[in-house]
Image (cartoon, rainbow, N blue to C red; front, top):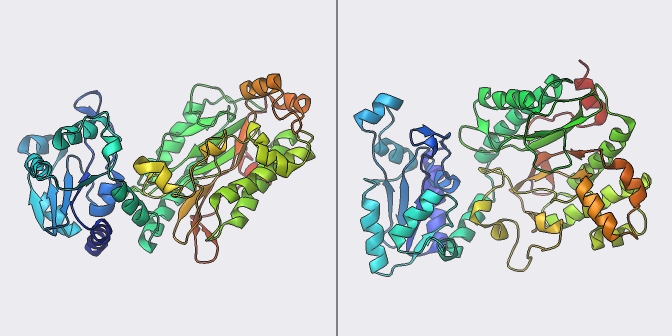
Length: 462
């Protein structure tokens, strides 16, 4: 946990932003994998953590703004539970560390909220993302579960996003811990992969590095020789000479702040000349996007800078033709770069998107596009000091997409399909790093990790 003052101040800011009514922040429950007592690794709700720092299941935080009362609701372990998992600090001690003065049994939640519903008080809650919490809130608030998310408080969503978007020094220090572990994960993958190994074998070592570094995975590892598919998880594919491995993975610390990086490396000791050409185009796009980072610029515009850099590189290889500004405006680049350039990052790897991507990455005046490619850009709004985000351009040669567009002659004024045919078995390349937006520019988070082709090859010198 951070200091007591951190959590007290966070709640004070939230109460001032909302003004009146009740705020409900349910913690997460334990979830069984294949029966009740064989549970998945517990992950606390990030907003509950942000305002309490308490990392254990089956808790509620209720803030009565009008009465100026903050209540932590939960139950201490029974002796039967202690037998299985060992002793835990009492809820009173947890509450004291968080600066919460009132602790009540979990069963009191029902009476508090039923009374608030009967009095027709304003009750603020976030859109739930887990079934157990959805059903619990549905019952407590007497709202059909099918429409519960629609009844969530936009006011609370925006207030929490406004707070959590700006990372403090203590949060940055925690994020950098996560990024350093993440870099170690990627170094393990780059140095240990060999022809004949399976994707599973490498992913296991990557995950082990996260856990041995004192954390967990921030998200399921993306590790594949089929890097053309954007979120392809590790499987039984056997690494072969001439292929590339795309590894997109991240750690989170024991305080649940995340890192998120991607590296692409050859299965052989060196990239082929063809691979290196495309790799350097991706690297140039990443470096151009990074150079543009600063407060006041729309991240959507940074994304478009990367898109044009990709087309500039591909035009030099003969895959693209024509006016490149017109090509980007038409969306021709999305044959090669189908996703967004990056996203906010913090206590969640895609920070706060469970609360509402339209509030995290966009504004009342800047709406998310519905166009192929741009609709996958999770962050489009103006950058501000204190934001933490990823920059992750890529080039992906997806055979199925190429075949479809070619058959439709889509953007044929910009794309040389005969030349693109030579790349259908190429795969994909992505490079990703994490950044803090500073007062005037940006800061790379964590220890630098090799990303130039020659430096990657030096690490592959087995």
